[in-house]
Image (cartoon, rainbow, N blue to C red; front, side, top):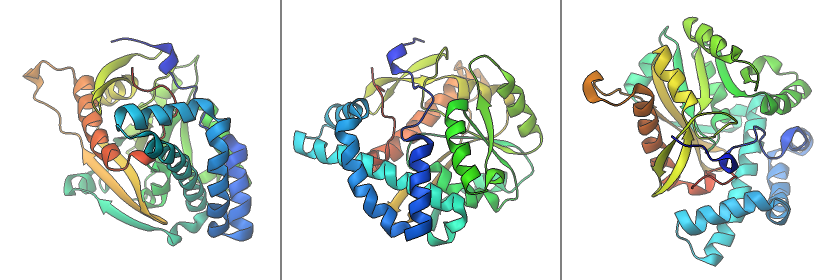
Length: 298
């Protein structure tokens, strides 16, 4: 295990509440098409004015994907463009326009049985694709989705939901620096048969990490989500929503299958290894939808 502070995420996503609210206004007044058109210019703006994110996307393209300079410049633009599309789409879906989207499912039978049953479940995603756009899908099971996130990020999203009168559409479990209350909330939610969703790919201040070979290079992944998943003992599902076209998404699910107890591998390490292996397969197919805009690889 090791820590490297410059690899930590600040806890706030790029754009903040103002970015969401601008697109909410445009979607309401002019529709999704106008929002996408504006986005093509906004994505260009971010290239020079978000140097840290641009450098991270460039390094990802050049050193991980092994693209040339011209292809990498195009990749950076497409990366920002896809991030903006995900923001617009999840804003539209949260505003009740999910019927304008097409959803496809890669959902094994063992996952369906758990999601349709009475047991709680830990769902681990990543800052890849557009996990929030799947909220209407989870709603069909009639269960409450609890989302674990940094408090700073939730405060931005909360302003957007208030503007749309949809605070009831989102049930967070916020993490603050000086409290462990989220652990008890997670335990109680799982005990009530709810889903607890968390992201497994960003370091946080004072959090433990583990070095994993990811897409051919060493990277640090947080141990916290996987320790919690192992300790509580509920089914663990990996979930990613990948955009396949205009307003078209494919949901990928995989149920974690634990190793035998005599394997010598700690349960949290086994979950982490299974998660990173599955995440690597989906990121390799759609790398322009990877949104970790900070120094990720060592």
